[in-house]
Amino acid sequence: MPLDSWLAFPIGIVIASVSSTVGIGGGILWMPFLMIALNLSPGTAVVTSLTIQTVGMGSGTFAFWRKRRIDVHLALLLLLFTVPGIAMGAWLTKTMSPPHIRLALGVLTLLTALVFVSLHQQYGDSGIERADTKKAFRYSWMVSCMGVASGMLSVSIGEWIVPLMRQKLSLRMGVAVATSIATIFGTCLLGVTFHLVMGAQVNAAALLWAIPGVVIGGQVGPRVVERVNDRTLKEIFIFLLTLIGIHLIYNSY
Image (cartoon, rainbow, N blue to C red; front, side):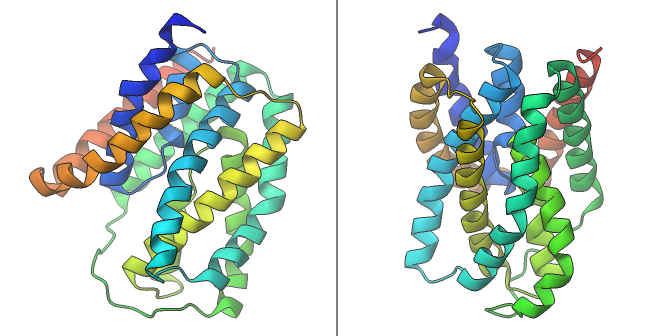
């Protein structure tokens, strides 16, 4: 067991806290840590990151399902749209060189930071309880493209589909978030399956340290929200993403 694998525990607390605070999946932060700090190969880093997220999102999905907040039909439909993209993303991870993976991750990290800068999402809870699934078919291509990024880099599609469900499908914010988490759980599970079938291996040491950290961090995040201004948290997150993105792009050459 690598001596530095224990770092996944405190980092897991931080990443889960940040993720639950700003409303994103942890993949965009797990990948740089696993590739840079633990020096894992892209394939191992992706499947390890997806496995960690599967545990966290599975817990969240069960909690929201019990509260009947998930639009199950929409979640299954969105998950169906992601299947081709996730399969392609897993194949790209296996075929692309590590520097190209770092470059793609760096660009996507900067793009995510830009989205958070430009997006003024309203967090009121007005809207409908269940979406028109026929209307959702119009955005199948968009969700499939998100699936490629998820399968290749283990990044969450939540940052992208929550605005889609709010602005295009008119869902209530609470339902959109719950449906997003259920969809992310499904995409992570599919991603792990595709990567394992293609020969990738999970880093067990990092996984064993990360899971308790994620569990603790999931409880810390909501308490942080109550004490720190929402805008300040997002500014810190954007700054962090920008630094990570620049570092990944610089080290890809």
